[in-house]
Length: 242
Image (cartoon, rainbow, N blue to C red):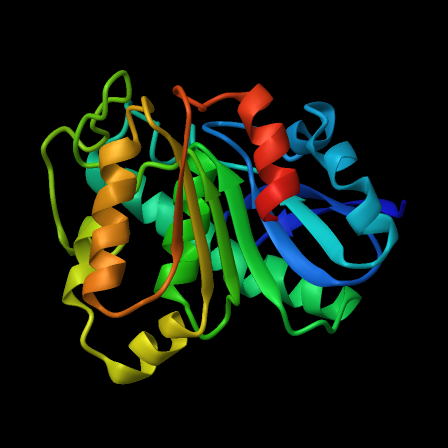
């Protein structure tokens, strides 16, 4: 299996950023790590190995990106305005730096956003915001509204709310989408949401699913037994849905 390491100084983030590439061809998959996770976690946790056959056959190519969650969404030492602004910079890094690299290495037109836990939020958020770019979403155990507590997962913005947070909260902006170009692009996406029946994120997944149905956006919401919010659950999920 092809494996490559890339790093560069990001002009969007003004810091060094790293990523790993697995596979040589196929649909390009942007893999977001879990909360404050690293670009090498997907490999270290055995998720890459789960997809070895798909990678070797040239069906998928993984681009495992790093996170800056400790500088953005989970940087509680900074005010909410700065946290969401830093998150927006991270999105621009993905769109303006990572995606051009993926296209240079692989011209396949299919682009997938994928992640587990907070990585699922990142995947769904960026792909729903930019549906003309992304072809598919595979979001496992995701929470799609960071403004409210979900069980053990706290609200992240201390009650603060502004336009930037609204536009980075899928359960908030999707219900109000009215641009037909964006809606048509979303209706052509393949959207797969997976969550456990006892996951604290279950309500959030249902809310996003309902918002999508209300806009006539077809998708799949799969409910797994138990909490299903850990690596032993994500291993079979990845093999089944990605």
